[in-house]
Length: 415
Image (cartoon, rainbow, N blue to C red):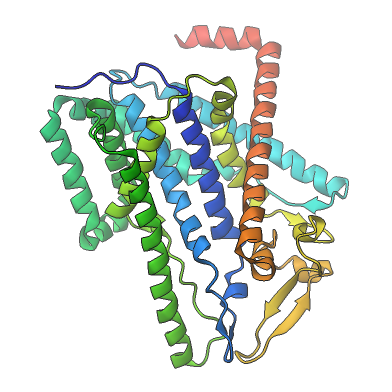
């Protein structure tokens, strides 16, 4: 018999959304804004300087965990709805996407027009050729509205569980997963599975007798497995480097779990979800307000505007006094030599992939300072994204105020 679910969203789930988005931002900083060649430089006397970066491997898991948590929350709250409203969230996401694109284009123009200490460029096509997760999220909701919810709610507990197990078994075999990948529906299949898991937790509360300490232990074990895998990959890459003898850098050993629907990974994500589900903090307005801005935060930090951002003059770590000397880029023309090129003019720093110089901070100040710097960047990016959400809300209110009569007339004509 199906147990009663929660009747309203509480701030523990909104807090989970915020944490998930912070994790996604950190993952993207690692994925897009770190120059791994700095870490991978090999000296025949010292070997690779990768060894202090286990923390990067752990951060590599945050992106997919964050994405999975969003889908788990969606499945948890939508599974019992007989009618799922797709139009309202779809219109809101389109509104935020195109309106933010216009705002960022204007800001990019102003940066250049008034010679600001930062520069960037962007275009109006971001909603079409970027922001993959938004379209992915909407597809899952649409499929749930017309097919998945009705099918899952007809199943009894055993049938529902069998559906989840079958989906996970199919996704776990590389031959089947590769077929889905060739059809370009592997993410869709993963999304359906995760949505179904969220719904199963809502309907049957299967983890109610699992101790909180056990959930924490699952998460710790998963992170340790990630570090061990990183160590093994590192050793293999170093051996290949010395065997080949014609490469300047050891290949990156970091693992992107985004490309693997691992059972271990799902256990970790569900454990985090369950831990937050058990937190009872009631309804906190500040948390709910910040949570409502998470999609705009995602749109901002994954935009062309942010990807192409450049700092003029001293790089950011120097401005924050995290580095005593001008940031440098390590170039190895020969595996046995190192050449230090100071980033003291636009010709040297503009071509550097790591425009936030995260690599430099990790390399010269160690993991603790590097991680603190990444957390500072993550929180700052989140705050800027929240600012843009408030700005977009003000613009929408202005449009409604100016064009209220026309909008009301249009609504009446569409009914």
